Image (cartoon, rainbow, N blue to C red; front, side, top):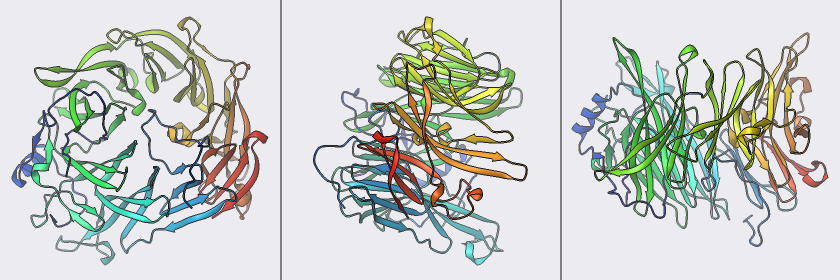
Length: 603
């Protein structure tokens, strides 16, 4: 049975919420109904983009027992898992890189249980994006694309025939492995390009989009699913749209239930191909999107929409839509707490910059769900020209970092949702790109140190937010200074999933890439850095250990570029051991003995 949910722009996720308001499932949406209606809607949405043809229409097992303390992917919302390139359980490490999947046993001596590489068909390529694990399944998600071209008469032909110009169309592939045997149980091909995924309990949600092909009347324009080799196409009555949103692409919400026997269902709606931000709480799905229009008198205008879908016993139900100005920097700028939705936006550049904080409430007005704006703050967040660089919500507080010349760190009081207020502001050099609550009163900032608005190194700071009157940067921050004519960066600066936290042992870590220069050339070094936290110290964040896989690299060490197989991507812990992971090796380290290496395995 196909579950039909609602529309909006690019995304979605779903699962079941207890105690959700009872709302008619398809309220506010319309079914497309026919091919003619689809053409009319796509034309009104200025759908003039086409990428590729559309298929012809076709109707060692984990051990039981007491659990060992095991790290999890660093996610935004507890209980809402996010896909990553590495996952771990008590007995195994699962990792992907390119088109390769490796599973390593860590029970006793490290051994390779699975090492598979996808073989690409001629002109067709697949690479992996992310993985998930449940109690029963390993799920591997990838992107598959096929190149095409045109012949002299403008007909579509395979790319390997040598005609040009070429283009490609893509789909999202999902492999479901039995965890015990590591054998593929199901293979799904989901239409479109992947936007986001989530795993909530045992339900996996994939959000994809694909273009509406109306260029060839001989081909059915609807998206095609493939379930274990069988092609499935939805009816027009199963495709929905919202009258206030543009109809440019198919947005596909695919749900794979992994509780027992995997089962795939889908929801399809018409929406926008412009990128947006997806946020998922345990109660609702939110997405924000900004659309630009042009007026001869006013120039380019932007309009942002925040749309919410609530979880109910019947699936996902439309929960309302609200408007905002500006754009949302990332998923951490949206949050739901105690029945309210909070969002921070930035609009403009240079002298036109404006930063705002919105508070919405989900309500039923005239039997329709709406997002009502109940709180608003548009003054005081950032000095002139300063844009929002990071946001983190925590219960009825928010911390916001803006930057242009200095780093104002703002503490926002949201205890009265209708009157958000700035409690305190701290001005210091540099800026944070990611914030993490070490405890209810301490915030870790990961970002850059700056001098005269120029970045000079990676900066790690702790902030005491226990009292607005004593808002301070705790002690001396740790700055990993760039060398002369050199610089450094880490994935942690733009991807929170790259950071490992073990706050019970007071440390965290991530991979750092250093680029430095001598009188002849540039060199590169990659290290996994472990940072200790001591809130009583004058330097509360310090480097405890650096780990490298450079010893495995057999070429000249001076040629150790960061794109070698031994560039460290992640680390995980199981019990008292830390496992540091690159695509070429895993090293095992004793946490209680200065992280000394005790074993390794190469692929």
